[in-house]
Structure formats: C-alpha cells, structure tokens
Image (cartoon, rainbow, N blue to C red; front, side, top):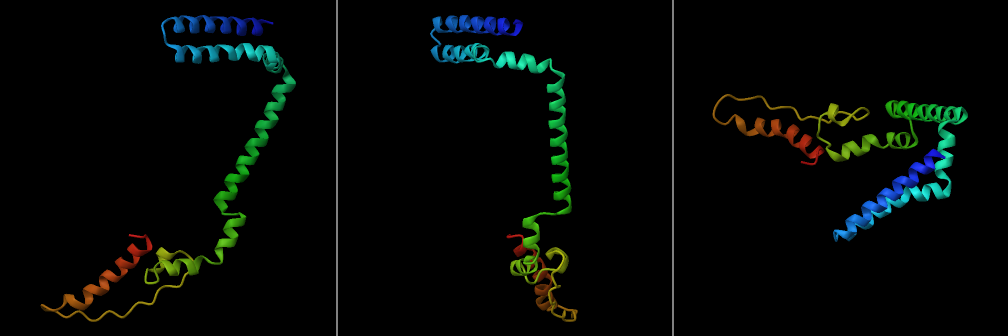
Length: 156
C-alpha cells in the first residue's frame, strides 16, 4: 500500500516537472521526463510493485535467491577450473594439429618459441669466424636468420 502511494507521488511529481520543462520550450527533454515519470505508475498498475514488496519481505524468496546465488557460484567456479586446466571440446580437437600449424608459420624459428610438441628446426653449422676485414659476410647472415624467423612467426 505504501509502495503504490510512493510510486504514484513520484509519477505525479515527474509529470509536473515535465510540464514545466515543456513550458520552457524544451519539448524533447519534457517528453523524456514524462516517459520516466510514467514508469512507476505503469509498474503499480501491472502489479509488479506489489509482487516486489511481497518478495522483499518473504524469507522463502530470500532463501530462493540464496540458492540461485549458490548455483551461479558453482557454475562460475567450474568454468574457471575448466579454463585453467584447458579442458574443453575445442581444446582437445586443436591439440593434434598444433605442431603442423606452428611449423607452417615459421619453420626456421627456435623450438621454445614454437611451443611443446614441435621438433626443433635444423640449424646450419656456423662457419668459423675469420678475423679480418671480410669476417662479417657469412656469419652476419646466420645471426639474422633466427631473428627473421621469429619476426615472421609474429607477423612482423
């Protein structure tokens, strides 16, 4: 009974504010205020306010909300554990083709960057470094091949 009276008073006050706003030639704002003011009146007329008031003071309803909260908590906990362990339908299907996908991305990349299950890439034997002015020709290309493979792997 009190909730319905409060909602009716809020609706009347909102409609009064909407009328004053319309008098000031702000019709769009007045229409929006009137729409907000009519919501509590509509809730009273449909019986939602009475249902909410009865639910708010019902111990059975609060126990039901507690049971729903516990169910939600269990559901979210199991989802978090599944994600942490990597258990799921999609993860099991993709595990078999993982090594072929990573080799196609950067076959010359180092083994730790490819992930587990992939064989390390064959590495050419490094030529002995010669001391002198022509030393940077062959060994410089070998040094940058690993870097190029890593950059290709990341799409750079």
